Amino acid sequence: MDVDVFATAHAAEWARLDQLAAKRRLTGAEADQLVQLYRRGATHLSVLRASAPDPALVANLSVTLVKARARIASPHDVTWRQAVRFLTHVIPAALYRVRWWSVVVTAVCLLIAVVGGYWTSTHPDVLATFVSPADQKRIAEEAFASYYSEYPNASFAAQVWTNNAFIAALCIATGITGIYPAQILFENSLYVGLMGALMHNQGADWIFWSLILPHGLLELSCVFVAGAAGMRLCWSWLVPGDRTRAQSLAEEGRTTIVVVIALVIGLGVSGLLEGFITPSELNPWVKIAIGAVVAAAFWVVMFVQGRRAVEEGTDPGLTEEEAASMVAVAG
Image (cartoon, rainbow, N blue to C red; front, side, top):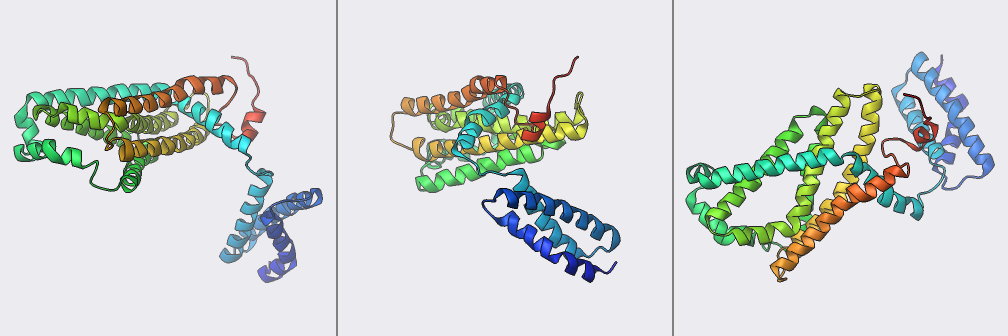
């Protein structure tokens, strides 16, 4: 087959397909033409790949077909109603899917923090191997508190959000391994326990808790959920149930993507708390209460609103086409 002749013969169709795919609104006739040209273009791409693969031509036609496919699959713009539904139903449903994993991970991590903190607190020589006595005193007297006021509030909030989002992203991105998320969570939990032991031994318990709790309740909740979502993704691959491994990973992968969006929002709120509330002059009990209310709201969204969304039929693991084609089966 002469590639140049083939491309010349169909160039007008491909150009029209690209033009229609880029249009914001289509008439009925244009929509029909888009579908027709998309089908022809897909056939042309198959012919090119099988008969005379030209990398540049194949790449250009592939991009055009991807744009057209996206236009066909998304025939309408996102509305405010869809955006609100995503926030009030899809996100809670996704969090609900990982609820028990999150509870177990949270309990295990807190246990690690408590045991590690108690052990290092009752064994000063062990604590000294991690932080020298001189550094322990410096941290308790000035460094720990100054950390929260060293930078401008907005800058510090953005920095904290970026750092925590990176940790959460690592937990999820490496979730398929099943090992790295557990390592991240273990190290993070051990560090919290170690720092608590250090502050306790230096008689600075109130400084520690009054600065950690306002933002840490939500921050750690998000990190634990990220680890839980990552490990659940691994489990869906190892134990797919009555689905194929590909189907299981696809469904859980979509759910995990929604969880990521939820955690970005949660960690953003946590960053604002750490940047503006934690270092503020508010009464410490007021700051702790704010942090507790926000963290409680996160878990209420997961368990209460999430359950309601699932009962109403929301499934973040299925596309709209898959959800519409699902039928009840016996057994």
